[in-house]
Length: 78
Image (cartoon, rainbow, N blue to C red; front, side, top):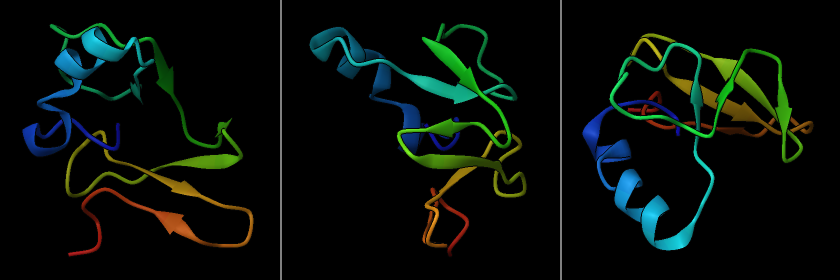
């Protein structure tokens, strides 16, 4: 998950229940009512993408960078 806002996270618990998908969130994820499968931290590489903690839009916002410089973002590009 890029961040905890409901338009990005709201359906995740139901989707996880229906599909068995693993859910990873930022270590700064503020919702203690949801138990993710794991936490992501700055600089970690997952699926070939480097995790970047990019707070601003949300305190737990993450972006994911490819080695060639392409950046995947949640809501930072507005």
